[in-house]
Length: 477
Ligand code: FAD
Ligand code: MLT
Ligand code: ZN
Image (cartoon, rainbow, N blue to C red; front, side):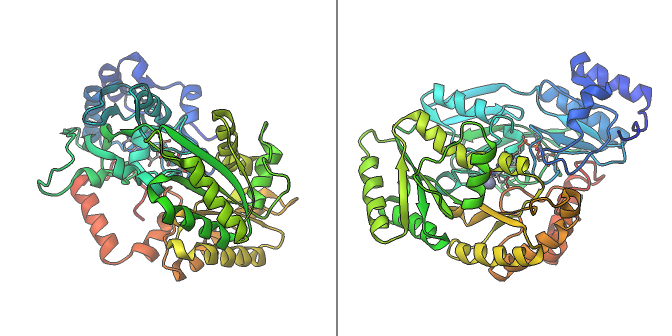
């Protein structure tokens, strides 16, 4: 158990309590504890309290009080960050700012096709609200039952449907932001076209809480799908997975809602650890692809498209076997094998994540080269590449060798990430495709983004947050 953090001046605590009300300030260590560590268990910070505003006015007042007192804030949504972005440091002086109570959907307009949601709305709740109105909010990721709108925008999350609808950034039209000095910027415009100077809203998307606090957002909605088809395919190898993606894309790009790659190892872990997960095919394979087609047209003919493309791919030797879902329950069961990969990896033991991207054409080479390099680096280690192949974003994760001490394995994290990054750099890729930089990857910024790019980022940070009180120690080295 870490030591108690240094106490805050009583007058400052009183002012926070007065601004936020009794439910808006947590000071009991038992209540604070869940906010101090991250989903992966990489960090355990300290903080004397958690601020929980219930609306923008309370949020702004809390930020203003902290700015006046020179106290740093760590915004936190669902706390599902994969890079320790929402965890305070060990010093004990940073306060956690939880947006969980700001969870109202303020407006939903099926003509404008927009939803105005507060930062703490859970992603799944946003999806459900859209569905109730006969629309679709398409952002979808494994953590959607916990991750929040503020979190997905602050990390510019990707997930399973980026291939069709883009990252979180593309799904946002306007923002309400509390600036580091406590002022509120109301940019909740729901316009499709608005060329009036710098697009400030895009500064805060992907800023991981280092420039201000997202209080609410106008999100784009889409027509709800009326036809969907999902198939789980065993494929010959990584090239075959990509070839299958291209077949679907070439035939009807608009129909591909998601296209995911999985290795035999990752599927094996899901079958082993996740209750109710079963292989829908007769035999195990080394590689799999999950195809998800969707159309808002009721007569889109997606089943015929799916069967025709799978037949061609079977004849070409790319697909070895395939299962097509016949019901909503089967669609979820097939998706579960993919979505439970992070949890299955967690249960299998220690793993190191490499959320990398390369040009789509380079994905098969990247997977093969990284896998070979990693096996040579740590004999017995098990590469678990999976993810969003249609976006060129593969989770090039590495599982510890069976029987190895997890602590000893994790001590090699830096070497593992460096080995993957060397291949990714050679192929013109990025060291963080969708999870962000957070605390985990700040030391990579100089090498990858150094020079004019990082200089510009630092100038922006200094201009917007001159006192450096917004999520210090994250993103910028
Ligand atoms: P948090 O973890 O609470 O915070 C993330 C960052 O945003 C932090 O830097 C925090 O300070 C900042 N922040 C949070 N709220 C605000 C706000 N209102 N204003 C300003 N800053 C804020 N990510 C993907 O992109 N694609 C995936 O497919 C994916 N799959 C996942 C699967 C699992 C099982 C898990 C656990 C995570 C996955 N993630 C994925 C990572 C994670 O879910 C995303 O990064 C998500 O966007 C984080 O949302 P959150 O609300 O939990 O944010
Ligand atoms: C996912 O797509 O499931 C996550 O982003 C990947 C991971 O946990 O490494
Ligand atoms: Zn992912």
